[in-house]
Image (cartoon, rainbow, N blue to C red; front, side, top):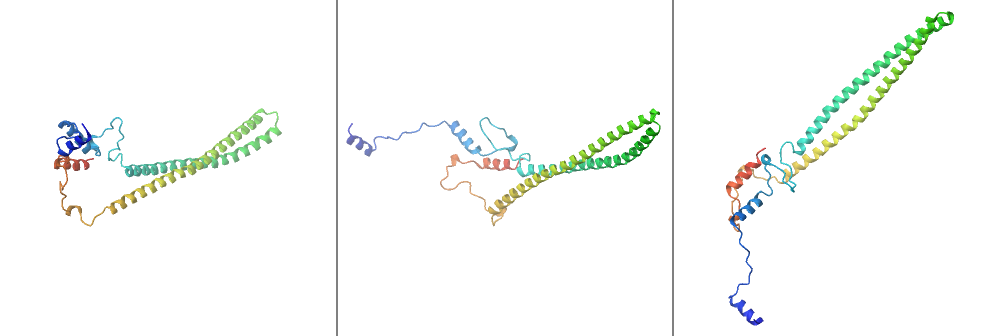
Length: 231
């Protein structure tokens, strides 16, 4: 067939050169339509992670960002206060030990002085020299106790300083919460209308140009809206 004959055949309309697609089965069309309708919707009450897909978590209380951050800051502040109270108790106990050890030290210093004089005057009496040695040993032990109490006091003070960073982190989280809430309020104000939603004219289900076969029915839309209100 020559080019002239082919052109004449096309112009006469005797040949249809358009390639027609293979018609899909009705069940396949329904499945594809259902997938398109539910692709962006997540049911909080029937939620599961499908293999190979990364869905955002459902909007329950366990996944609300600000809700979780509020719990974190609240619990963090409460536990930090408890820790500060315990550290304060440790510091008070250490101070009492240091104060008591000083009083005991004065007593043993006088005791030791007496036994030193007695040992020098009566060297033949062994009990005096033994008591003097015991007094020296107890004084050394008392010094160790005082040093340990001072170390505990210093450690508790350092722990309080470290806990200040915990409070700073809590304040940072609260600042993030405030920024997020401010943005949410701004977005709500941005999309705010002059007419109350309850007084708005109901929207048309279909408009000119819509393909009704591909549109969701009223029952589908109502079911979708109702599912968003579930928790």
